[in-house]
Amino acid sequence: MKKLKIITLFLFGIIGSVLQAQELDMNLQLRPRFEYRNGYKSLLPEGQKGTSQISQRSRLNFNYKQDDLIVKLTFQNTRTWGDVSPTATADKNGVAVFEAWAQYIFTEKWSARMGRQVLSYDNQRILGEQDWGQQAQSHDALTFTYQTEKQKLDFGGAYNSTAENLIQTPYTVANYKALQYAWFHNQFNTDLGLSFLVLNTGYEYANADTKLLVDYKQTFGTYLAYKPGKLDSNLWLYGQTGKSTNQEVSAWNAAANVNYAITESFKAGLGYEFLSGKSTNDGSTVIKSFNPIFGTNHGLNGYMDYFYVGNHINNVGLQDAFLKLNYNVNKWQFALIPHVFASAAKVVNPIGEELDSYLGTEIDATFGYNFKKDITITGGYSQMFGSKTLEFIKNGDAGHTNNWAWLMISVNPRIFSWKK
Figure 1 (cartoon, rainbow, N blue to C red):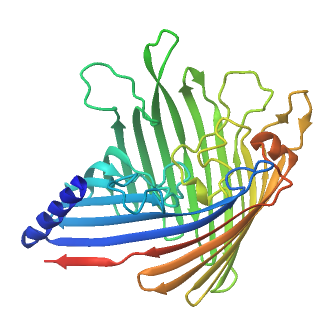
Figure 2 (figure 1 turned 30 degrees about the horizontal axis):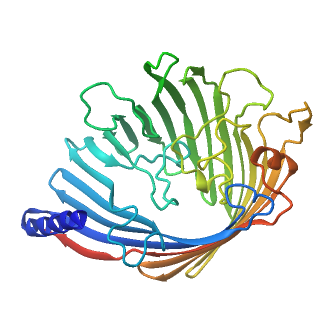
Figure 3 (figure 1 turned 180 degrees about the vertical axis):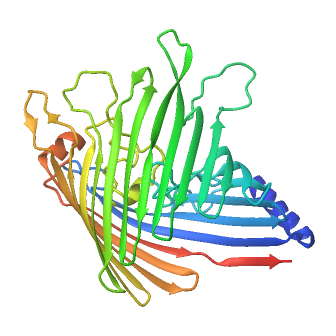
């Protein structure tokens, strides 16, 4: 109730000051999603049954601009239908702030932004919004931007604490203690763009003497997009080095995708990605498994989220070869994406036998329908045909039918807009 009062007061404050504002926009997002999970994220254990639920995101967005000042504030509630009783006096998750930042434009080329914000670049392999997750992802950071007609440079950082402490206190949040990054993009022409990213993340840990230390891991690389005519292609290469909890890091990631518009409605493409891993019988302390860190991983290695969506970290890595078929007609969009997965490093069982690197095949089918101006309906069905090697890595039963289905409705109305 207290949070609702604060939000109400904020609303009246914004509306009351609108005569001094140049631009004010307010919009809502309501996004319920039904999911049937029957082997989602991991093979279904033997003797277990799948489950279903409905989750929902509810957002209220404020966008304000006056002269050289831009402000954004987004309130958000995420819930599972039924997680509190109909007569509950408080919500389980409450209302959270997803974005709360102010940006000042110093010159035509320079600006700065501070506060809770989304960091999203290129195809979101390393830094992304993770919008599929109802909670999504944002950071408390200070960022600077330099932009010309063809070039853009973003750089910034963050420093995190659990509270306003008076003495040194362990940082217990499952997050980085400190972060610095720089991203540079050059658009050579309408067809060709090239980006470079350097990311430095520091995670706190306690050593054997319970002394608090911070180890820094560096992720760096390049992303190239080439889109001439009917061709749409991209490739990227990233490396990781540094240290993590006093262990050396040496890992890498590479991928290439080529898509071609056969007709105005039909597009076909091929892709391959390699994320380095560590053999199960490798006794070294070096971390050889690439970690996409803050990437929007749901959209890259199969929609069933078996890999890199809160899982498969410090594991045998991944090879992902896939085909993409997209067909759009009128208000409908259809896609079919089969993936063939294999490990990037050797999989050796406890008795020394090397297992086949093939992990399984996943088939993803999705559809979208633009029902109204502010209403879209999307859904899909996916099935994983796992191997014995996937059973060894993930446990569960590959012989069981492992599938997943979902249906989501997104309602995004603009409720107020004013421009002086």
